[in-house]
Length: 285
Image (cartoon, rainbow, N blue to C red; front, side, top):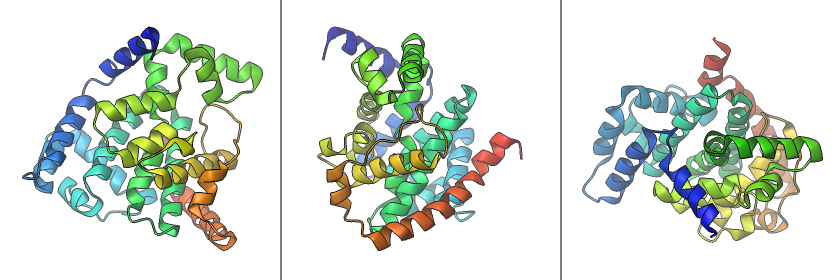
């Protein structure tokens, strides 16, 4: 790592624009790793922040996530979904707030679409933790948010290159920064002790063959990211639809029949996502 890149990493990890998030994530991480802490104990920590806990519950109970009105408490959510999923949702709600305050509605919509499709694929492939894959999809691009906050000038240069040369954001970031939003996402996953099942899809959704700890989940998020771009649900920062990584596609073993079913379920899921409580809030409904 170059000195400059190391400096950028330290700056990003300071997270001046996300003052409350690291403390909450760190507390949850420590408690999750402790064998003598129950779901109720962790739920109480999140519940102390009434605004945060309300937002997490709203996200869990939204139509796109598949539990409309069924989860009444953070503890209930922890028991049903697991620590890693709820920890990811705590992060997701904070990222959502930043996106809304900075006018990044289209990026959130893209992220929500990716989460929806990732969940559909995971369920169709009988993955044991489809909700965790969905959360990974929801968070896969949060490095873009951090870059826009912490490196505004460089972000403007990246956007300019995308528009003038019709290249992908991933390529433009590499040219300007010599690293990408996926790298930034991975740095923060490490800082907040997020599990590899979440951090690998975030770090390698553009290069799924690099995933060592969660290759299948990473392949699902990779495919979901491409599908949601192809459909045009939201906007991730560029209009290019990349090719699906051959190794990732082969690893998923999706038959033509399964693909047809995924497309049908995906369309229904995206319709529900657009009607979710989060977009009702944005639309003022």
